[in-house]
Length: 206
Image (cartoon, rainbow, N blue to C red):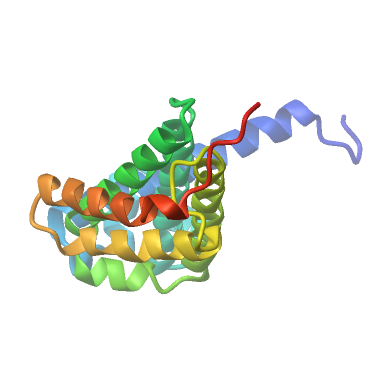
């Protein structure tokens, strides 16, 4: 009937269905890990929880590790998008910078409890983690450039170096005992970014 051409609507429907199944697999895996721990999760359990057959599951992912990496990629992507949304709430560069750093620090703190050490070691070994960090460094660097141009932070250190400093400093949130401690860490980081007043240039006039 269609010859060699498949209607686009059909292709879009199939792709949407595949995406729904893939997302359901990731959600089921996360639920099972929360209930039984990493070692208690099997492909059979994932298929049963998702409501699909094992054969269907293997068409999407070859093993549990591949599912976990895909779940982590989605987790990172959602975090990066949330930071963009945080930034867009503020017109003032300094407030946008502080809010983004605060959101990232809290996410880092909460991920420790959410992932657990064994799962974190597994998913953080993928190349997607390095790519995401590069994206995050660039994003924070843009915020730092804007804040420096407005005279809000020091300008005696390159923004690229300050971005690395911020992310390295905020990684300590992983081991902090509480959210108030995370907020104190963000305050310390912002104090370091402001630096001596003599190292800030006047805000640029429009």
